Image 1 (tube, rainbow, N blue to C red):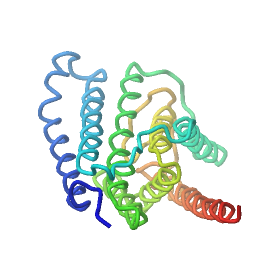
Image 2 (cartoon, rainbow, N blue to C red; image 1 turned 30 degrees about the horizontal axis):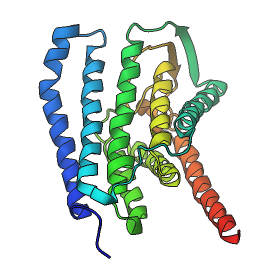
Image 3 (cartoon, helix red, strand yellow; image 1 turned 90 degrees about the horizontal axis):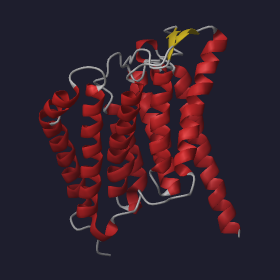
Image 4 (cartoon, one colour; image 1 turned 30 degrees about the vertical axis):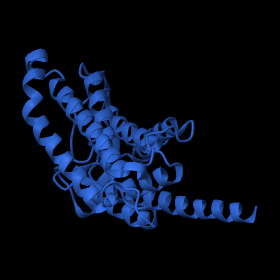
Length: 275
């Protein structure tokens, strides 16, 4: 059967990486100067710069995907199920809340104060753009560039890429990369099941933003106090200096979620075949 891709899907993946590198590089060169001229340095201007660059990356990747995929392009930005975006947001923020509560009950998480930061809105834009760019690259264009017959390979490879993208983060460990890959697999399975990127976008955004609001380290980065000031005891369970995403508790949580998704999906398929 002849492929409906305009070009071979492997060349399509290569094209997407080229676009990603070009927009990232050109954005770092061209975007900061006008933003600094408009907003000055500090006070949220860096977050606005990242917001613009990440927005362009996601848009450029999606347009390139539609171009190289031709008739094989899948509408993963389409409606999906009605509440997928909201469900993703609830699950992402809910998991962070439960994990924070667990560490609070253990005495590992101490709340030290509450005061909204003046840059809170700028950080909201930043975390929105990070979820948009990273999800568009991994669970979006790359995962859907793989032909359906090897979609499982696409899920595993793009999830591994998601983990490797965090290799440059401060304080990363082998476990933090494994955990980030596990998160990627979970979101890739949800994207595959719903045929929509909405759940992953919502989950990614509220996971990061909820951690930031609680004053907790996100993938090795400390954003300071955005809303609540806390201190988390650094242990193997809590992820040491990398934050909870580098800890063994997150490993247990996402292994469990992946197993649930696989078994639940198989049960659904079995029930459907019986009907």
